[in-house]
Length: 168
Image (tube, rainbow, N blue to C red):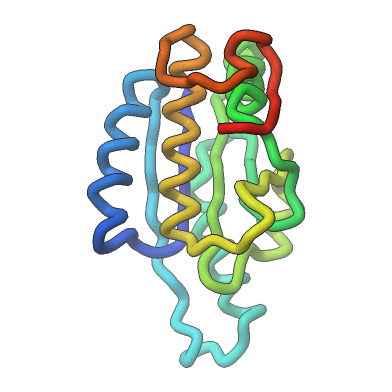
């Protein structure tokens, strides 16, 4: 099964090394692809809606055919690490092409992306930069892989019980 993370913009600075590390780790568990799409210049377009539309088109172009779209959005469900692992296991059992997690830019995701999403996922009730959201998501994908294989990385209470407690 393939897992894709498509995000608006590049990750720079101190988060870039951490992201690269977790992307490498995640590839041990999934066919993993990370894609960055160009940010739409706000000054050129003049409005946030237009920025979301253009970035949304670029994000959707990176979704593998048939992949289930997961939109990272403030109104989404908050899953535990175990719930994410169970979601990915379920997709793998279905034998489908996988999942594409989409992270918007400074103005969020377009309506088209949100309508296409099978799942809306929130990483936090707080607003995160797209760079930080990408790092947190990628670490959680790695963690999901370790949970699926019963490896000791994940030490949450739900690891013993087999169901989520909400703690990472």
